[in-house]
Length: 245
Length: 245
Image (cartoon, rainbow over all chains, first blue to last red; front, side, top):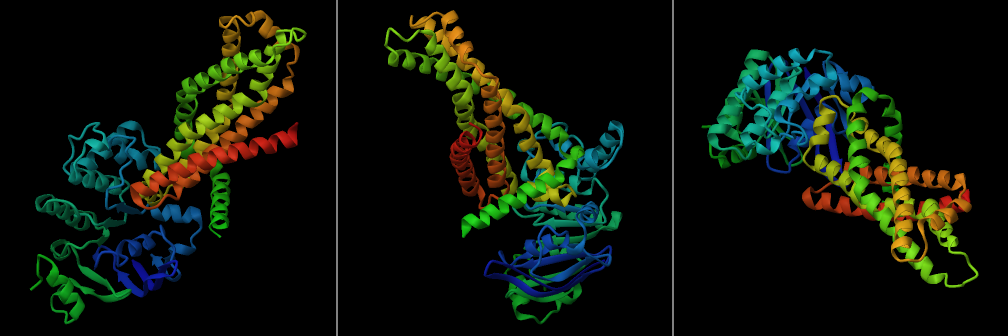
């Protein structure tokens, strides 16, 4: 379980948010929503300690991630898969090698087993025929799917998605959403999704956290969100192409 | 204040690089490829720069030494010593500040702004051990090799220029060079090569690793890396001469 307590972050004199309190139960999917620049990705990057807060704590299974020794933090990070907004694939190696990358460093598996596991993950994201294509040859949707395959290759307990459907056409967005649902349902992974896409939020999430006015403005289940009286949340969701009512 | 802030971060990066230099498993693959990129791939430009420097130096020294009482072999002595003590290291250092420094800053800067460094960290890697350590270590090994190549080509180019211009035969040139040759001069030149290699790669890694702001930020980091490397090469050259000679 992930617990965030009284988190505060600022860059220089610019306060991003403060007093953020959240709990993400195991096996559930949380969507972090809010306007561009409100600090959604910043919040997510605190969960695996890619960023350090000004104050407050983030605990994963009872351990404060910002107080872990470097070795323990690295072990913890291996339990997280992270799909970055632009997929963050390494462009000096092929798509296949991108997925194999964590296995080559963190396991002592023989080559045959590594190849089998990579193919398994690529099949899961419907890219089994990707071969040795370079990352520059891939479309936006394919890049995200390779990024997702790389994120799940070590069988993480937690998956974090940063704008998984941004810049994609509706059909590819749906494919990515289906994959997220598949990961959550079949692999029992706890997921955190940063997105603007209300259509995705309604499809894939169990909980939603709305960041607004430099704080966590609203937090609850998706069913609660559908009937929430929170004016700014309603305004945000109504501005979306997909209205919740 | 920015200078002190940057210097502090630079020292911190170096400290972390030294601490993580024991993680050989993380960086040995990159170390080998960096030796090829920094050393082998830079050989042609360094040899060319060395050869032309030697040739020009021979022609200009011949032009200046017009006295009939000064033996022609003195030209060889001046050219060989100048190349071994100063020019092979400094000229190749300045050339490599552009070639190697700019490449490193661009690579790391692009990785930073496209979140590839975050991806490396989020997988549980030590990104400094993975990216910075192999680049700096490769320079320790390859810069002396490049210095030797530049010095050899400089002496060869000088001898050839003497023959082609009709100023002195190659045997006379080499006789002069041998007459005043000191093994310490080579040690001094090699020391400079190691220091320049460290200056170029550490500054470029620092500028690239902390690049911000998209394509413009990467461009700025690259320019700064090349310019600062040149400045610090000249400063450290002066410092080494003052201390060691």
